[in-house]
Amino acid sequence: MNIPPLKHLYVNPAGDCNLACKHCWIAPRRSEIPFQTRDRLETEFSPEQFSGILDQAVELGLTNLKFTGGEPLLRSDFTELYRTASEHSSNLIIDIETNGTLVPGGLWDVFEEHPPGSVAVSLDSVTAEEHDDFRNTPGAWKRTVAFTEELVDRKISTQIIMSSVTFEVQPVLEMAIFCRDTGVSSLKINPVQPIGRGKRLLERKTSIRTIISFADELHRRCGMSVIVDIPPAFLPLNRIKNSGWCPIHNLLGILPDGGISFCGIGFSCSELVMGNFLQDDLEDVWSDSDLLKKLRLQVPAEFEGICGNCIHKNRCLGNCVMQNYYSSVDFTSTYWMCREAEETGIFPQTRKIKPDA
Amino acid sequence: MEKICYPDNVVFREEPEGGILFNVDTGELKLVEGVAWGICDFIEKRLLRDQILQKLRELYPDETEIEKDLDNFLEELVEAGFLLTEE
Image 1 (tube, each protein chain N blue to C red):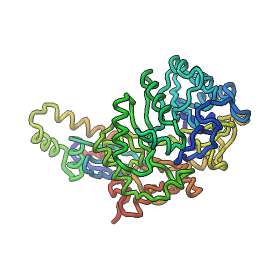
Image 2: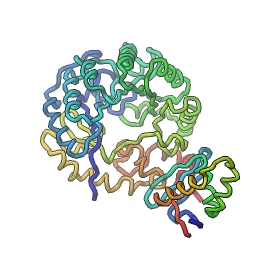
Image 3: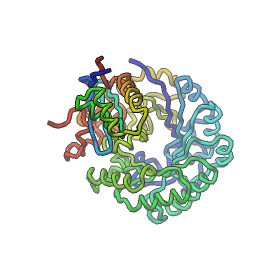
């Protein structure tokens, strides 16, 4: 079996978060003080240890690194971690996903020296009250907006990620106007997933028909400026080319204790932790892990249900294999939106390998 | 390049915004819009290369490079495994 290059690392420096968002798929422990960074915990990898894994990852083909979490900016030594990565290879593109409420010391200086590829900031409403309620933290909205404006002022490519539970169009249109007026590069809408805290949130069931209509309406009214994160089978053709999909075959996630998993899924499913870079050689894990071998064998070749009969399966790769695994302990199971669309008869026939007779 | 057709493992699907060529063996996809979509539809209807050229000349009488553009597109499809040709 061919071993693909390891192009992407999702680095989770902190397992906890200063907010407690209602939809979070990881549901991390909450840090003690809402808007204050904290020192590195003894159980977390240090910048020096981080440098070691970068050496190995670059050898395996690393081109993109994303700091995510937990909240990556919670660690007061984040700037050192960022500098370690940015000085490691001039070709490495570094992205950050953050709630934008914390500014560890030296952050703006290191961004000035080594601008990130992009920073994605979570913002769920143009109204402080709604955002703070969703994030379970009064005062979060004000800090996130100030952080976003600072990024834009510094000409850093900035994306707003807005989570949607209700799939109402109007709040997104208001956010699109906010993005335009602020100078934010793009707006991405993430439907809340039935995983972690999001599982409870989605018990108030929204039909797949509503989600597809929501995406169609936004595409019509906002054009390419709004990205709705739904599987390609539900996107019009002119949207597919510009959409990005999970690079699961070229990706590893690094957990705060050095654990190696597919992405942040290792927080929720400990059986998906394949090793620890503080003890294990990354190349050995990448080439010999039984879990990775299984994933490479099964995805997409052994997809079940509608995912196995979808013309997008080679690129979409089940949309989120780890979400699928979480719900069924199986890499080959069907993504929930596609399964529901098929069950309700609205999965597009033109996107099936074998259309219904 | 007179007779042209899709191989058995390639299907052409049409949607309101364009068409999709799909290789069921490799999973390769090609999205086609505009004139390319029209050409793919002509191929689906089993028109010969010269018949397609004639149709395009009728549709776009002012285009001077239409034959070259058509042949380039057909060549692109052949190279990507989406089209078979016979002289």
